[in-house]
Image 1 (tube, rainbow, N blue to C red):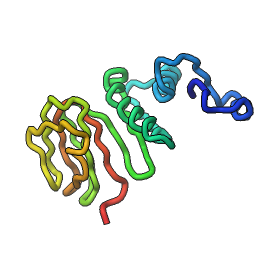
Image 2: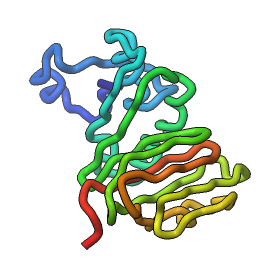
Image 3: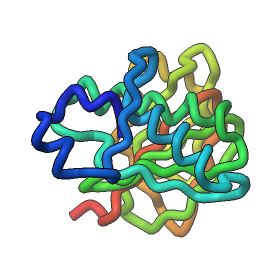
Image 4: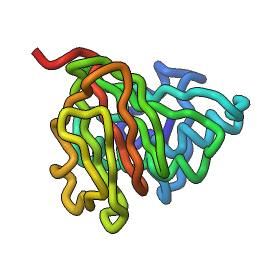
Length: 164
């Protein structure tokens, strides 16, 4: 799914109808894929898993991760998770309770640094703290079966495995 600019003619041909080409350049391939999926499938109260979005270039990874916040507005009735080799990324706004486990590594990234963030159920709780730099909410740890986060536009990362 995408503009196909990274595929050779042979690769595109070998994919056949599994390759959906969208030639416009205003949006990236992840956005094109979500638009296609939500047009072709009922997304109301659905769960979408995004795979392969962190790819082989850090700039693509950062851009795709930031898109999770855009999807809050574009697909408010869908639950969207980006799955990586090491964990899952979700976007949130307002207040949300996350299922977790003791020792799960958790990082919070604020895309609205002027909005204070609070988090309970983490080893290092936050109380109305402005996360003005991306590193400020990282490398935390869940204490038990859940934690709660309140804030503006946030991306939350949770590992699959506990810290060793």
